[in-house]
Amino acid sequence: MLAYTYIEQGKFELREKPIPEIKDSRDAIVRVTLGSICSSDLHIKHGSVPRAVPGITVGHEMVGVVEKVGADVTAVKPGDRVTVNVETFCGECFFCRRGYVNNCTDPNGGWALGCRIDGGQAEYVRVPYADRGLNRIPDTVSDEQALLVGDVLATGFWAARISEVSEEDTVLIIGAGPTGICTLLCVLLKKPRRIIVCEKSPERARFVRQRYPEVLVTDPKNCKEFVLRNSDHGGADVVLEVAGSEDTFRLAWDCARPNAIVTIVALYDKPQLLPLPDMYGKNLTFKTGGVDGCDCAEILNLIEEGKIDTTPLITHKFPLNEIEEAYRIFENRLDGVIKVAIEGNLIKPVFVLPHTL
Image (cartoon, rainbow, N blue to C red; front, side, top):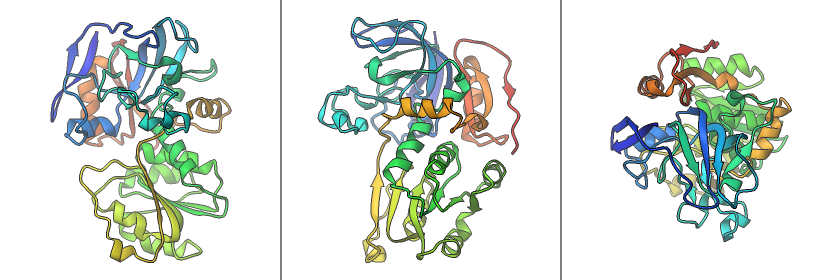
């Protein structure tokens, strides 16, 4: 099968690999029908994820059809259409029992797929703990609608949940990339008083204005002043930092009111400075870390009910054998790209989906 492989820092390559087999009675083999490229894949490529193992197949955001299951798998069966969770988790350890599945103590727990074990930018993928890591897609939900459930949409849902957003809040979201917009969609479900999105890209800012007219939009240069003008208590009640750029960590806490919650969703390429003397007295609560992706069934229900729709984010689609071109467009943010979908083992001419950028 074709599999996009992490060779060394700065180098991915499309290679032929054997189709994976069941290794454990709790495994499932999934034929990937649609995958996606995530910014975390770029972090691996650039050497920002030290635990990533050279030689693995990358990719952790995918949907597909179950081909085989181990003897102890009961939640899914061959033929089921499924989402694949970015997190691998046993469901039984101290952290899993409390919903902190990102810190599962299993040797392959947490972010394993496409990082420490073979992922899904391939024709097939082996999913450990399939009863936990796979969710059946409702018949009325398409692959495109479900594609982002296991990673960036789960991340947005988790971020909105841990940020304790209330209907009285002014919420600032920094970054309107794929994860930022998924976070926005999940914050909208909380119905806060106002939402402000800060985005430096004119194309992405325009996308937010056109798709979500109730949301206020600003840019990093004017963000603090804009937030002060459009908040009630000297800053945002909740800040979600989803950009991960050079100055956005400072911008996040600087735009927060005293006693606010600041949730760091972003993954940074470099260490960030926590200037405690500068923020002394603000009494901020910081929340950060990898997604606890255990809400996928609830998210699929919300999609089925029409309450979440991420399909406008999929601006480009490529067959697997053209994945290097897909990466070039995604990494360089060309042609108004937001999210790129990769078709599994279907070889078709590339096309660009209509969008309003």
